[in-house]
Image (cartoon, rainbow, N blue to C red):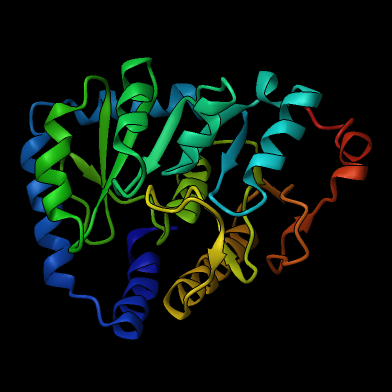
Amino acid sequence: MNYSQWNAWYQKIIKDFGYSEDADAKAAEILEKMLDVQDPEKQLSLLKERIYNKCVLIYGCGPSLERNILEIKRIGLNKVCAQIAADGAISALLKEGLMPEIVVSDLDGRIEDITSANKKGAIIVIHAHGDNITALKKYVKSLPGTVIGTTQTKPLTHVFNFSGFTDGDRAVFLAESMGAHTILLAGFDFGNYIGKYSKPSYKKNVSITPIKKKKLEYAKKLINWLASQTNTVIINITGAEEIIPGIKNLKWIKYKTETQNFNF
């Protein structure tokens, strides 16, 4: 998706949710100043090294996440695919001893776990928007490892726009942009519950709110649109009943057989 295509989606989103484009742009400018010592070409190369021509597992924060992680470990997918955690999913991965190559976050997840992953080598792709300016100012400079910035508005020199709205679908757009040959979605539920890893304050899965449901509807539409435009194979291996139109939805009872022919 080029910027003009994304901007058409973005304008619909901010109108539908009442977000401020000016606030989003201000957040991007703040993050730009924090990252202005970076070499943008080097940052893109670091991402590409971890994703290009690979199978990429992307972990969302849905209620199926913990089950999916155990299933992935059981058949060893984590050993043959690069891994990207969407924000709070990093906490579930660390709990099971898995270290993703990349964490895509708007700093809603557990900061201690994001920091720990960054210290151990995970690239943190931090998204700037109007609602997380305080978090950007508080946490970005204290992260010990590689940090890359993204925005929903016009890309800047050090802050990129790979497209996408929620942490989960932004991770999908990132993986596709960096040349993944296959993208597998785990923990991508779109039902009536929000996974407990979505917010540090959650102790269990909670009923979905109207605003969260609307965000997930946009995530589904965006992933569906991307799948129609790319040669990258995108498969939802969450196993939940809620499906993403245009995306193959594999149930785990069939998964090992159905993926035998994939060149991971």
